[in-house]
Image (tube, rainbow, N blue to C red; front, top):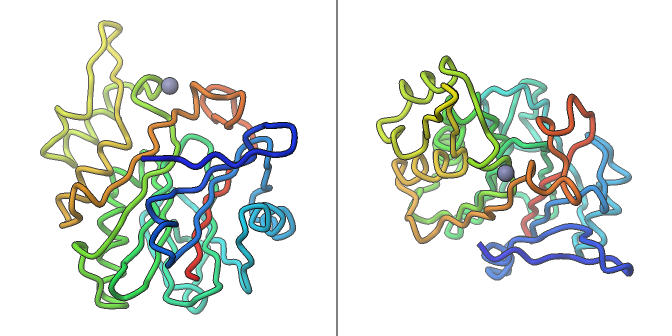
Length: 245
Ligand SMILES: [Zn+2]
């Protein structure tokens, strides 16, 4: 995926946008960094960041993010136990927060519907990507073949190391697990969360050529991004944003 880097006046990386989605002229997207910091669930810093990307929301919606796989409609069905939001409403910015977990941005170009889902390892195993498509289909008639999906920055297979019980969860959930789990001599396993989500979305009917991956590892880039794993139990997060125009 081509990332568009947004620089501030000191030439620091203030944020990213996702050209593959923005170029449709149907949406605007964003992902913040530690320089263009957005505070979790905070409207003021979210609005300031949006403005720097040329996004002017009439409304902003967050969700609880409990590492589940529930996806709800915004604004009417917002709930504190959701990890994904979807809407067909223009000017409503969907916003979720990250420090290593995987942001999934969805755009149904035919029905003009968007979604944004938070896929940690638990959400990935819970197939939140597939759940998002199923929820979009039920609410708006979305066909996965009409969707563009972007997978934003997250902890990469270089750094996402797990013990056997977690690897076993992936093995049980996905037929393609051998493609995404790499056993290490240490007895640990490295898992590719981006690829797991991409393959699961393809399995749900999204076209391979319509999936865009950022391939930026949060843990390898703590000069600009936050990593919960690398930095200890930090409270800081990056914001993912998508809004229909
Ligand atoms: Zn890494």
